[in-house]
Amino acid sequence: MLSTGLPQGAVPKLERPGPLRDRVYGALLELITTRALQPGQHLVESELAGHLGVSRQPVREALQRLSTEGWVDLRPAQGAFVHEPTEEEADQLLTVRTLLEAEAARLAAAHAGAEAVAALEELCAQGERAVAADDVDAAVETNARLHAKIMELAGNAVLAELAAQVDRRVRWYYTPVARQRGRQSWVEHRELIAAIAARDGQAATEIMRAHTEHTRKTYHEREK
Image 1 (cartoon, rainbow, N blue to C red):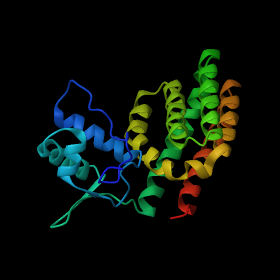
Image 2 (cartoon, rainbow, N blue to C red; image 1 turned 90 degrees about the horizontal axis):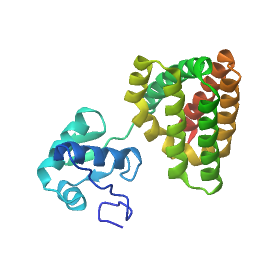
Image 3 (cartoon, helix red, strand yellow; image 1 turned 180 degrees about the horizontal axis):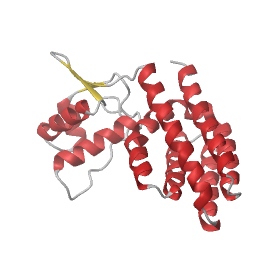
Image 4 (cartoon, rainbow, N blue to C red; image 1 turned 45 degrees about the horizontal axis):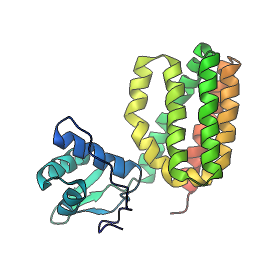
C-alpha cells in the first residue's frame, strides 16, 4: 500500500507523447473516477509526484485544472482534497444521464443491425462474467463500454458529445453501487438489448429510463 492509500498497481502509466501536465491530469482523473483516490482524500503534491515519476509542477497544474472542473477541492492552508459529491450533485447528474441515455436507446433501436446487437450481447456476457467473479472494476468498465456502444449506435453526434461530458462522473457515482446493483443491472441490460434488437424504440426508451433510475435510487440508498 502506498503512503497516499493507493493500492499497488493502481497508478496508471503516463502515456506519451503529449504535454506532461495533460498526462498527469489524465492519470489523476483516472485515479479519482475509479475511486483509487477516495472522495475526501488528502492529495499531497510531493507524494503524487513520486508515484507518477514527475516533478511537483505538473501535479500542481493538474490539481488546479481538476479543481476548476469540480473533481478536487483546494482549501486554503490545508491543501488539495478529492471532492466529496453531495446528494444533490449526484441527483442532478444522474437525472441528466437518464434523459441522455433514454434518447440514445430510442435511436439505437432504430439504427442497430444484427452485428451491433451481437456486439451488445457480447458486452453483456462480459459484464455477467465480471459480476459472477465479483470483479467490480471489470463490471464497472464493461457497463461503461456497453452504454457507450448504445450511444454510438444512436448516431447523434451532439447527443454523444453531451454524454461524454457526464460519462466519467457517471462512472464515479456508479462504482460504489456496482456490487449492490450486481446481477440485476445485467438482467436489465439483457431486456434493453432485446428491445433494441426488436427495433422497439418505445420499449427501449422505457427500459433504459427505468434502468438508469434504478442506479440513481441505489446511489441515494447506498450505505455511506
